Length: 132
Image (cartoon, rainbow, N blue to C red; front, side, top):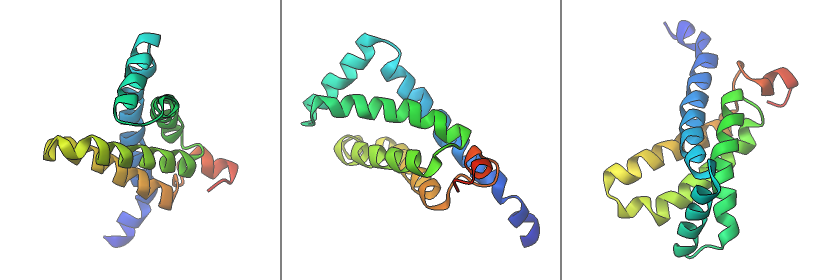
């Protein structure tokens, strides 16, 4: 049984990449889909006490980072940036929303950290290019 499960590890990494990447693409797309949406998000980041340029970095980290995580390209870097983004979101916004608010954010941060430490797995562009 354990050998069977060990053989499925590449699929587990792929499913984690898909879960994190698709979630980040969805949330990031809402922020970068239009100039007005991006401006609104950047303004929100400023109200939290951060410089405006971090709003742009955050939005594009979610969107572009999600795309490259799904592809399995530069997964450790993108997952690390996503983890930082999610941890900042957790400690600035999520903890004020109760369990339902921080639960989802902390789950995404944990998946991102796991991919940052573990890598993209065998079913990735990183592995094909020898980056992992």
